[in-house]
Length: 486
Image (cartoon, rainbow, N blue to C red):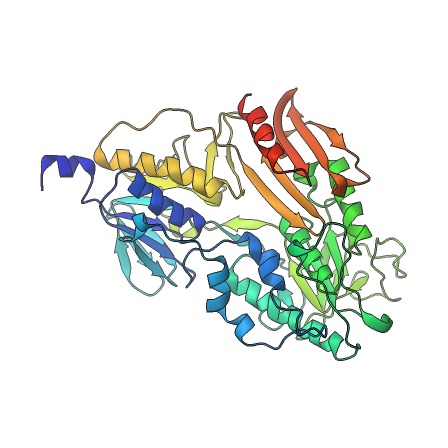
């Protein structure tokens, strides 16, 4: 080996743990940063990297309504995981043609001294440099009641989660369709024109009853999709109006009112304390359920009587969308700060205690780092833009450290951004609105957010975020530039 090759790190093996968007972008950016040595991407899921946002919207609704008669299609080709994966799989760039993907195998442990990863299948993988891109898993409710496969309780994070939820929705819709006369149905939610109403049950017959526990962005997206498919949908959120932490009270209340007009019910300020039912959920038991006639609920009626300690909200299917947990257990022995994700510096380098020679970085949802665009407080950011932005910086850092070169000290100031399609509302968020202490409606009317709305978010008078609802994409550049100019 030549001295130049040794210095460039050509022989160094980089392991990327996590085969989602962050893992794929890390592999691409390692090549862009000049690393020509082996790269192995290891993922617990059996699928090559794919886009997650469609899971709660168009892919969830894909062909569940069809046949022209309103009845949900039978399970078959439309549920083939391979075919569904192809609809959302990321295109693999030529630069990663030589990257090894080891899929369907979780990493269970890390030995930084020997540069070895322990795998769930009993195997091992070696590395000289390590990038953590393992992302998140859904948080689950730990309350009494039915649980496990077939219980009617669902989460939504992976393609397999989505397939299970689709199957549950199909079964509920089929049961309803068997009682209802044929009727035309609308297109999936993201393809519908703004202002169009959801599917309705014929002849006053009961709809499938879906309860979404959690009023965050994923919860509201699933609620809108289920409502569009013809379900009776209620969102239970103990903290306040939906997406309160990001949107602020006034904008969150406006979004809730818009969803209520579309037929989605909300139970605000009450927690789920149990699930009713034996092997399968038949209802959601709410804390402090003292009004048995349901008069205290918005859009959700509760039958007379009590069950367990509270009132019961009937449910044929439940989706838990109560937040996420960083996947960091595999790093437990690495000497890293895993208090909330992987603590990194502004270059995305993680610094194991007592192992200053170790080359470790983190990207995407699992990385907790300071962003001088806002302040010097390390935070995790669960936004669509972050895996790509953090992978670019982490790849440069890891490549430089393996080659013994100085690490780039230019401040890393990524602008978080994401979008959310919810029925007739398309929301775009820029910056970190959740940091704000002041919210201003700069454009539009809170009573009619579907006609266009812009809210700006300031902390101590300084702009830290903006949320645009149904504004033209041409406005997005302006909103980005306003934040980056701070």
